[in-house]
Image (cartoon, rainbow, N blue to C red; front, side):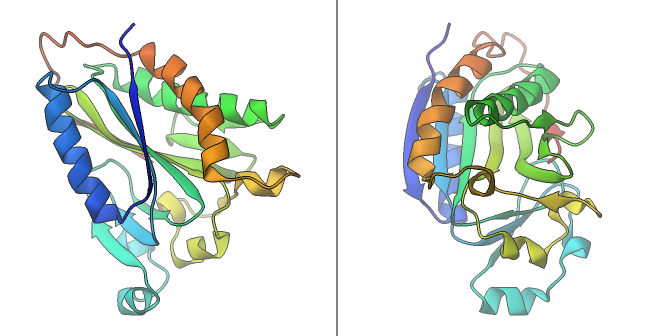
Length: 225
């Protein structure tokens, strides 16, 4: 199996992490870097995917910017998504060829397995990529595949300030809520501690879909959060 290089970057502004993603992606495509997982935390930012999603803003953009939110249009699949402190964000940059659905299921399975570690039950959503606990989403997933190599990834709510989600209709899904891991676990959680648990699970799940040969790279494909 191909080794997965993991980098924990701490809190990084979204735009800075996006530039890094592009650089790492180019290196992985060219075979100059091993498949890489970037784990980060972002300051408050609202991102809009290929479907747009500005109609799902519930607060005026100028007011959001005045409150310290960054607003960014990005090339992942999906609608509007929030990132912020207390959220563990993972960007797997790995060759997957045409196995986009398998890749999405692997990301979901990793989060479900993480929840099982804490004696919790979560389910993936084939219709809307992500992981849910009942009616509430605990992890959003939105990816883009370029030249057969993945970008973007998942956002897991660990100790996230959930009131920040009141600024949007998360992923454009009305009537659904959001939750965070800390609300279901008695002991205090940290992003580093959760990353310690999640990383080996992700390595196991992602290696199942990695295709380092990519003799015929797929055209760009997208999947939604």
